[in-house]
Every structure is written in structure tokens, then in C-alpha cells.
Length: 337
Image (cartoon, rainbow, N blue to C red):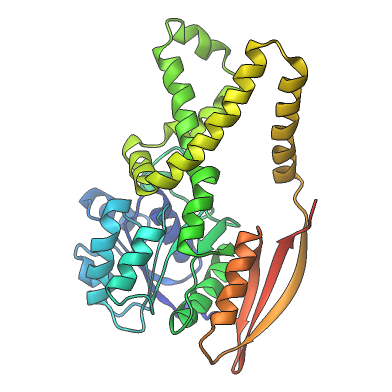
């Protein structure tokens, strides 16, 4: 177990996700500080009982762990800045919705050994510390990107802490695999929600449509309420992969359109049966649990290979323990349909 009360942490950028990380750590008794470039947000953190110094260096000095939670375009510069203000043993991680670019940047600047790219898969359509809560990320799938070598030590330590403090389902995955998966799992849905909500906004009978809008419209457009700048940053940060996956969605939509245009009920039904199977798989997923151990020493290549294979297979970690000679993982992997 991670000695979480003994951990000294900081959260840089205390909006919805960063604020929720901050409040959860504070509620768990962790010695945590918060920092945000907005003075009003720092005052709000202090009102909630969390130390929030006015200077970034004061917030991150002598910390064991720093979460970088600012807007995506600011992450590379913030990573370098915070790295210079913290010791070599301080683990750095982020919560950004794209991973390949920041992971490559960290490697270029010699920070891979203590920077673990991360992405908790949770959120709401609201923004800011006032929308944050200590339970928002509880039980969430939380991607962490392991790297063989010295970086594996940072991954193990952080993953154990996230499981302990957030009940996180840690999904180990390479940065490029994350961005490919997230394109269709998260980013394209923002495009589709925006298109549907935007079409209604332009419709001559907008108010009448909204009066009749029920669960299907509300569920399908929820993320269209996300702050526009945040959505734009996410989509641009993963542009090529999002466009590639959007083409696949468009092809399926074309199939539906063709079947509808031709009044082809069997083809239309077949396409919706196909879509329904994915929805059922999401709802009814079953997992097998098993344990795996690896030696503490070595180059950790086999360990990282197994971890990434687990994540790509749809699995996750529910526990791990770092012992004197071995690290023990408890994993869950989906049962084949």
C-alpha cells in the first residue's frame, strides 16, 4: 500500500478535473497544495480549506507528486517549468485528453524517468473549481502510460496511489494507443454531439424541438455543453486520429442513409443490430481476474509489454503491491463474447 497520508502532492491547474483531484486528495488526508493562474480560483481553493499559494514555486516545492491539469496547449511549458522547480524524485503526471504529443515532449526534454502521462476518463459538461468534487473521479478508468526502464518505478508508485485513493481502474496503455482509442471513445462523440446540438440551434423550430427533446437528445448532446475552447483543444490535439475515426463513423452513417433512402428495412435493421451489439457489450461486460508478478529489477520491458497488452485488450488494474523483490499486479480482463 502507498503511504498516502505521507505523500506531499500538488495540483497545478484547478479546474473541473484538477479541482476534483485536489479535493479528493485533501479529503483523503494527503498533504496537498493547489495552484491556478487565476487569483479567484486560488481564493476559492483556500475557502475550501486547501492551501493555494500565489506563486507556483511555493505550491510545488518539496513535493513527491505533482498533477499537471491546465489546458492542453499549456502542458509542455508547464511540465518543463514544474520539473525545474521540483526534485528528481518528484513524480509528475498530467490529466490531458491526448497523450502522444506530451509524452514525446517529455522524452525530448529528458523527463520520461519521472513523468507518467495520464488521463482519467471522467468529467461533466461544467467547468471550474466550483463544478469539481472529491467523488467525480472515484472508480473512473484512469489511463497511465508506462515506459520501460527507470520510468517503470514511477508508473508503479503512481498506479498504486491512484488505486488506493481514487479506487481507479488503472488502464495501462502506450501514449499512441491511448490517442487512437480515445479518438473514437471520447473525441468523435464530442463532434457528433456538437453537430446534433448545433443543427438544432440553427433549426427554424428550435424552441419546439427543445420542448420535445427527451432522453435520447439529452444523452446524445451532453458533451456539447462542455466549454468550447476545451473541446477545440482536445480535438486539435488529436486531429489526425479524430479525422481517421470520423471517416469510419461517416461510412457507417452513409450505410444508414442509403438504407433509409432505399426504404430497405432489412438493411436498416441489420445496421442497428450491429450498433446495438456494441451498446450491449458496453453494458454487459464481464471480466476475469488474475494476478501477475514481475521482478523489481531489470529493464522492465516484459512488464511494460504485458501492461500495454492488458490495456489494449480492454483490461485494467484493480490493485498492485510493490514488494522488496517483486511487484504484484491484480488485473481484470474482459471475457470473450
